[in-house]
Image (cartoon, rainbow, N blue to C red; front, top):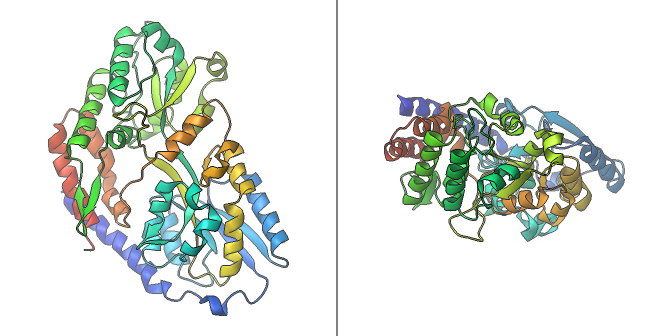
Length: 428
């Protein structure tokens, strides 16, 4: 039944992609474009770009391009794929530049909805760009977007509880597992219902940290086909570690997504000693606890001492619409977006690691260095327009929930690999 439902989602997604592809051939050619001043429209997503950065972009663009203006239009994440399907192919409706989530970009670049900006890479940041996001914006060896901002997961921990339990900051995943177990057994403050770590199976990017940092993953491309990777030795090691945590060290394994979004409340009250989250979670930690000096953060470890583990990088790319009539002005705006001032404002006022790591020092605070390290070592999900299909019907949530409930990890992995392969190879 699960596979049948996934196939319905495959058809829906392929319709979406085909709809864009069928119309993308109407993009305006550069020779017929940029005949004079124009008003560019840029679509940023809700809560992505701080108002200070938006204002700077509009002012600087007008200054550099006399007679032209730029308007920022903020969009909602909910329903954005369908809205882009309608807007991108139309010369009259398309935004000139658009933000897409890192796992969405390939859906549009693979059908010609975005302009090829490979030749501009050096001017937009070159090797300083977050590499995992460059990979997500690359299709058929061409670049169709650049990293706007990123945020990867690290581990927050209570320094006071670690000290009382005699635990050092873990340097490997094995040490992390030992620390979780030791803290659970110690419960230094004798807190009723204490869990050493908050870890919900519904918050897929948190357990995913174990998967990626162990060297596992969801699927690999082999000889033109996607092959599921959840049954591999590295993935199985990660899944068994997760299952041990859910069985012995946390009572929050089946918490809802909404509950997971408020995990910092349990951290603040001392109900949990660790939690996995992005940098913005730190703004929700109580001032009293932060001021006490008892909050620490470390990058998710790998299997090797001295090598940070890879975790999922949330964030966005920014691209130029292939249907835009103003490619020269689009490139001007994109250079401003990827420049020092705009990228620094993303860090200072938005709390994001900027897509151009040359300006990552603008991100300040007690956890800034760890956040930068996490992004530099980040990893994304399979780079294919079919990934959204693979995750339809809560496939990943259901998979991790089954592990949290005690299902055999290899049995669950085989079933999930089948679903993932069915979805990813649907267009082959």
